[in-house]
Every structure is written in structure tokens, then in C-alpha cells.
Amino acid sequence: MQAQALFLGRHYRRAYHLLNASQIVLRDLRFRYLAAKCLEELKEWDQCILMLGDAKVDEQGNLYDTKDSNIMYLDKDGEDHEINISSAICFLRGKAYEALENRVQARQWYKAAIKADPLCYEALECLIENHMLTCEEEASLLSSLQFGPEDGWLSSFYSCLIKKYDKENVVEAKFRELEEESCSSNTEQSFICTLKTNTDLLACKAEYYHQCGEYQKCFELTSVLLEKDPFHLKSTLVHLAAAMELGHSNELYLMACNLVKDYPQKALSWFAVGCYYYCIKKYVESHRYFSKATSLDGTFPPAWIGYGNAYAAKEEGDQAMSAYRTAARLFPGCHLPTLYIGMEYMRTHSFKLAEQFLMQAKATCPSDPLVYNELGVVAYHLKEYTKAVWWFEKTLAQIPSPLGEMWEPTVVNLAHAYRKLKMYDEAIKYYEKALALSTRSVSTYAGLAYAYHLQDNLNAAISFYHKALWLKPDDQFCTEMLSLALVDDSRRGVDSRTEFLGLITFDERV
Image (cartoon, rainbow, N blue to C red; front, side):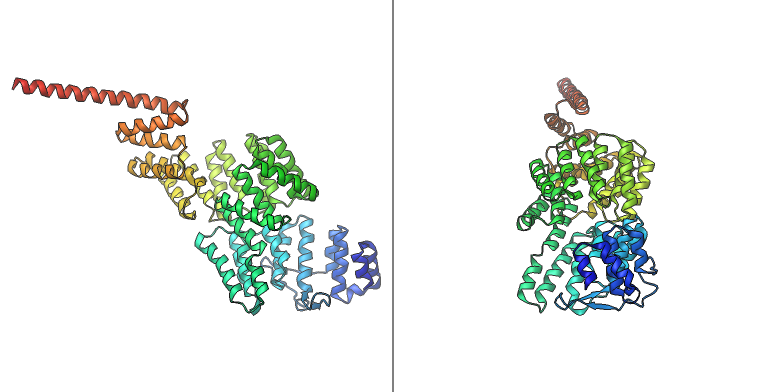
């Protein structure tokens, strides 16, 4: 009791000395855990691991020595909820190894923590938020957890937390299943209502909308969530991402000011400042604040990605690649760093290297449509047009329907690839589909005009060249091709007139 009181009073060194001097840590696992918590607060991570004792864990998170795995501590002040000390110790080991930058061991101990107690939400959160697992590893871990009969809803809730790159109907079914389970459960009505409007669950849904490219829908949902709970940080992060995609610089400015005022020591606050400057295209200031976010929390993935993107926007490829490589090393379960490395190589026309990194991103996350789109672009540049068509069609197959404006470039790319294969009817079909998504794309009008031109449909070609030049009057390609189309059309008119006059002369002679 005295040691616990000292710990709660922030006298960590004194509490540790009391526990260690009495040798009680050798006899009772609970006191050993409290001593390790003191060392955690003192940031003495090596000593913390030594205090927790010798134990081994495999890659799947299975403990070799499980003699303490069933020891439970009943917290009298916690409304008779049981705390699994073995799970808590595994989680603390994971935190210690992560602080020592041994992320392999940290991942294994986090797995062990949640396997020892599926209610150890913090361990799953660390695995997911820090991108320690791939999509398949996350799904495999969830399937291995043994929930109690009364915790079925928790299994569905966890499935909503992990990466959401499945088909639209699969993800929607997960959210629907959780709501149905909560409605059919025999718990109190207040709990059901709380679960239906749970902020964490709705934040997961907003994150899914962002991944699908439905930024407006995501922004509206997170706006409602933040109005209800202004300090929900996961909703705040998704809200910032959606606002940046939509170009809402005023919203980013207000969010950044509030976050810096309320949480000056959190990486998220300075990440928000970086997002604002990135949105208004002040990239020097942007990467300065992204850098500050990474210095406050080196395990905050969005800051590293933003840091690299800010350099990439200024075409400073070496610094961008350095940031992406650091992110790839720190977050092996996140495919975005390798994806951006591939895109950076593509920008410098190193297409073979770009393809290697994009394939690596695909292996990490095989269901992200953006990866397939970039692979299609690489194949197009390598003049492998049949392969490019296959990648672009696979991209569209991965995207939830209906298609949003975000994916208009993919449809145009597919049309370009078909045009290169001289399949003009297919190309025209996809150009028209792209125009249905966005009516102000010069490249779409130019591509459609050129396809008609190659089909020798000069009237349609001239019409679409004019539409492209109305959007961009100084477009050199459309200007030159319109001149050629007009010359060809005038020659055709002269030939037709000559042929017509020749027929009349012939008839008169007859």
C-alpha cells in the first residue's frame, strides 16, 4: 500500500527503492510489476526489462514459459473487474522494447499481451497505430484471440479497428454486424445506445471513408464527432487528413491553433500546423513542423509521411527518400512509405526500381487500389500497354462503387493504354466515363479528341480539341492537333467537292 501510494504521488524512485529493499518483488508478481512501472516512469528501460524477469516469446506471440499466465489480480476499486497481470507485464515489456527501438521484440510482446488477455485494448492499439503488422498478420492475430461468450461484440469491434482495405461490402458488413450484435445483446439499453453512437467506432468508419477517397463524407462525419467530443484525438487526426485533401485551409488553421494551445507536447498538434502550411503550399514551413512532430514522437507515422511529402513537393528527392526510408524501417506494416519511394523513383524515371518498391508495397497491403494504379503507370511508361491495362482494370475492381472524382485519373490512364493498343472504341468508352466523373480535365478532352482523330472522325475530334483549348488555351498538343484536324477536314471537303464536280461533268457528257 505504501509503495502504491508513493507511485501515485509520483515518488517513483522512492517507491522503487522501497519495493526493491524489501525483496518482496521476488515473491509476488504484482509487486514486481509495480516496481517495473516505477522504472518505466523513470525511463530506465533496460532495468525495467530486467525487473520483469526472464521470459521468451515466439514470433506469433506465444509465451514459452506460461507459469504466470493464469495469475489474476482482483482490483477492489475497479468494480470487481479482473486485471490479467501476465498480460500487463507482456504489454509493459513491449513498451520497454519499443522505447529501446527494438520493434521486433516489441511487436512480439504486444501480441503476447493481447493473446493473454483479449481485453488488453492498449496492446492492440499499439500494434495498429504504429503499423507493426501487415493486413494478413492483423487478421491472423484477431482470428487467434479467444473471446468469452459475453465478448462477441468486442471481436467485431476489433475487426473494425484494423486496416480497412477489404471490399466495400465486407467492411460495411463488419460495421453492420457490430450494430446488430449490440441490438440483439441482453445488456442494458443504455449500453446499446452507447455502442451504437460510440465515438471510437464512428472514427473507424470515418477512417474507412478517407481510405475510399470519400473525403467530403469523412469530413462531415468527423465534424459531427468533434462537435460531440472535441478532444477525441483519433477523430482529430482523420479530420485533419480529410480537411487537407479538400483544401480547407481555414479549418486546418483553427484546428492547429486549438491543438497547439491544448496539447503543446503532442506530435499531433505540430503535425496539424504542418498540414496547414502544406495545404497553402508553403512547403519549407511545412517540413519544419513535420520535423518537430517527429522529434516529439518518433513513432507517429503521419508525421514521417508528411515530412517526406513536403520535400517531394519541392522536388528534393534525396531528403524525401530519406524520410520515406525511415518510415519504412519504423513501420513495417505500413505500405505507404514503400509506395511513396516507388512514386519518387518514378518521378526520376527509374521505372524498374519504382516497380520493385511498388511490388513490395503490394505485398504489404495487397488490396490498396492506389498501389495497382501506380503499377499501371509504371507499365505504361515501360510501353507494356497490355500489362498497364491489366493493372488499371484491377485498380478499378478494388475501388468501392460508385467511382468518385478521385479516381478519374485512373480511368483516363486506362483509356490512354487502350488507345496505345489501338482499341479506340474501348478508349473512347473510358474517356467518356472519365468525363462523367470530372468535366474540367484537359487531358481527358485531349485524349478523347485524339482517339476520334485516329478513328478519322474529324468532326468529333475538332469539337473535343476546342473543348480542351477552352479549358487551357495555351495547350501545345491540342493546338497542333486541331490545326492538323482542320487541314485534314478541309482537304476531305475539297476532295469531296472535286469528286462531286467530276460526277456532274461526267453526267453532262453522257
